[in-house]
Amino acid sequence: MSSQHFFFVPAVVGFAAAFVTAPAWERRLRGRVWVDTPRPERHAKRPVSRAGGAAWLTGLLAGMAAGIAAATGALGGWSRFGVRDPSGAMATWTPDRGLIAFAPSGIVGLVAVLAFVLGRLDDRNLVQPGRKWVLQVAILAVGTLGLLWASGSRGIFPGVGFGTGSADPAGNLVLLAVAFFAAVVLQVALEILDHLDGLLAVHAVAGAAALALAAAPGWARDAGLAACGASLGFLYWNRPPARLYLGNAGSLVVATVLPLLLIVLAMRVASGIGPECRLGPDLGLSWDARGPASVGRSDSAVVSPWRFLAVLPVFAWPLLDLTVVTLARVRRGDPPWKGGCDHLAHRFARRLGSDGASLAVGALAAATGFLLAAKGLR
Image 1: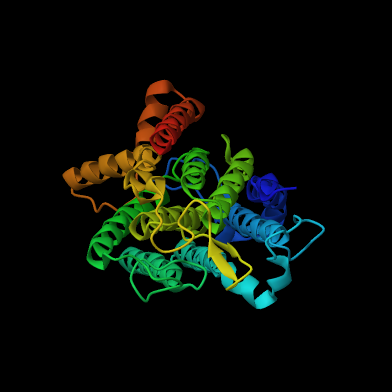
Image 2 (image 1 turned 120 degrees about the vertical axis):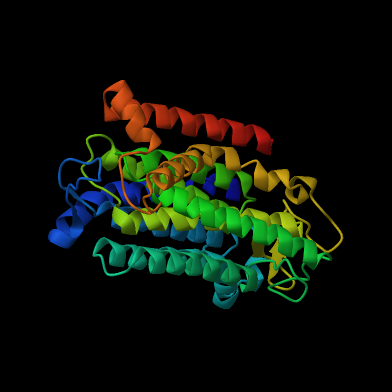
């Protein structure tokens, strides 16, 4: 059995974990601090549990763990689940090498947990909006730096991370700075998208799927697939009329993990290879076949900037929504971070007469964005 048979394992496990644990988290997380109550500036008109964020995080972590387990088997760690290993990788497998190889997945998981904690503080009104924004950007920056330095990732600068990096560190720095700026904007856009039942979950499914499609086989693709599966599993409980909400905790996790994976694509563009690694028979780690196995080789599909830019259409709706509400609130003299019912989905709901119809428009936009991204990635 080849490792390709494990391709959808993170998505399937992520879906199952989010779907199954959602009602359990709802029963476990009770009390006023876990209930979203209606407010004048909110579209919601009834109290709903915020336990969905815990379910989504569970799905993400379970999906990534399943990806690690499947890859471990394929690398010879668990021979009964893996492949016969003619290259001799099985003979050189050690737990330490496994830890090094999958360190990036651990960093993504840690970033997700930190974002969840910060979101919970926001749910309980224990952090001011400005300070919260600084902290969530800091979490994104820490994740980016961690992935640059992780032994399982290829650094884009000489001497940084595992490998020699690129010969053009100045150009790579500009590219990474642009990608980080785009990720910060996308983080805000996704976070405020949780204003209509099912809307953020739908766009998270499409966005995570596009990010997984753009990534080379390895931990980044597994993380994208896990996020896609978790979003799909949570969507069942979040469809109109929603039984569970993500809350600020869950929406911030989604809004941090997906932009972080977008930055990873920029790292792949800048370095000329994906930060994907596998166990090898000589030094323990070798690079995925989608990127160069040694210095001097290149993969035009990875080096091309279109590999990074082609994913952006899938996030067109969240970015347009952020632009619309920001301009509308500035014109009214309100701060951009003040809540309101002036989002695109709210406008469609009023015009079409139902939240379900508005969600259908949002889902159509997400599907169109995904198709455009998939076409650009071909």
